Length: 148
Image (cartoon, rainbow, N blue to C red):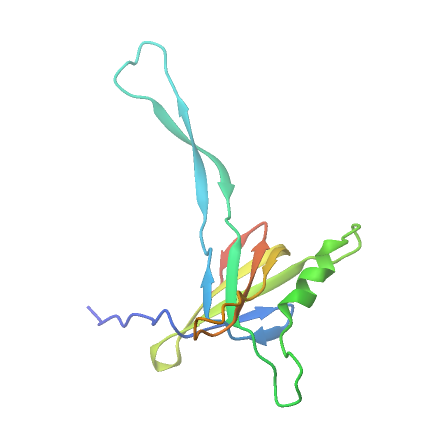
């Protein structure tokens, strides 16, 4: 049996509509099916458990709030969010890929489709702390696929 090397949870990349970015954290790569319990008449020892609708939680991305050498924010999460604030049905939903970099150049990829940014959260300001400013977005989507 060949030895398996685990992927580090700290090295990943996100691509949204062809634009790549690096984030501090990514969560929400989940797929969950509802459980439908059905009682059968005369069978009192248990219930049948059937598969119901599949749910995909929102993907949450967090990154440090920063600007480049020109003083411009490279990846503006707030601008991405604004595309959907006044959505009148004309805004194209987003697709994306989350790639986890592994040992020896291997990669694991997940893709989401029909996404839209349902929440943006800016940095918290507190003069008594010495922390990095973090902004985050939540992406509601309609499907998650394991790509590689």
